[in-house]
Image (cartoon, rainbow, N blue to C red):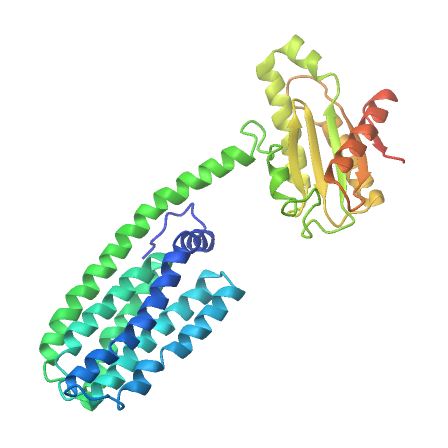
Amino acid sequence: MRILPQDIDPRDFYQSKFDFYRRFSFWAVIFAAIGTLSYFVSDCQLFGGRFAWETLPARLTPLIPMTAFILISRKTRNYKTMGYATYFVIHCCIWCTMWAVYFLPDKTHFSEGSIVLQLAFFAVNFAFPWTMAVPMQTLHIVTILLTHPFIHYPNIDLLLSLNIPCWVAICLAHLVMQNLYIKHYQTTKRLEYISLYDPLTGAHNRHITKTLLQENTNLFKDELSQPLTAAMFDIDFFKRVNDQYGHANGDKVLKDFAKIVLRAKTNKDRFIRWGGEEFVLLMPDTGLDTAKEFIESIRIKVQKYNQGVCPVTVSAGIALYNGKDYRKLFNDADTALYTAKKNGRNQVAVFQE
């Protein structure tokens, strides 16, 4: 059974869902572990008011996986890793509760306690895939059945009749909430696309630059590994195209040029519509010689391409990132572009200090 629409990447969707509910799920786990410890008070009451030393180890044990959970949450935000860590803590709370119930003189109160533990599943399920949450919650029912021969719940029928409807209701509620989050996710993705992509050409817009910088600096992120080269393109005499053939045909020229670059670039490269007929291509792990050869091949493809409007050529300037202010890289590429246009257009120029 497919839970998500075909156009949604499951890994990206579930990671987004986890990031959205992460803090809520985190505190639900903490409260569940600490809440299990608080049951020690009722244990003492069931033992006639004396200190229930028999159940104390069981009530304290969930604090160990809770501590490990906190440490793991500081190391990773991967939804799968955190999902298994989360459900392990919840099940530890359940297992330790059953451990404590084994010693209690009156075991009937576990019926209410098991329903309270179901609430922990209800709280954490929002952050994780439905296909993960259902088996993990089902394990709660299975655990009750497996431990019955050892603990001998006096009201096993009532225990199951209370827990199974809760299990069904929580699973269905989670499925409904996941479907609601699909709409939120799709809306968010559309807004992200509009904010970072040029709708005409499919290239990034200038706003993408902010996402490529280290926080609170003017330096590119390490993922844009050096040597990092930038190429700035300008479609030659583009104003004439608009004036002679109309803006609709001008848009077609822009789209066809972008199509050529998008097909040729690597997955690491960032292709940006800088403004009007100007475009920038950021090429990580690419030196000047390799970049010049590649940009020259694009220039030739543009010159030979027949888009059905008019012959078009492109000029380009190339510059190498010096590891400092990103704006200097674009300024250097623009200077090289000016040199290419000054020298006759339809050529590639390399920036020289």
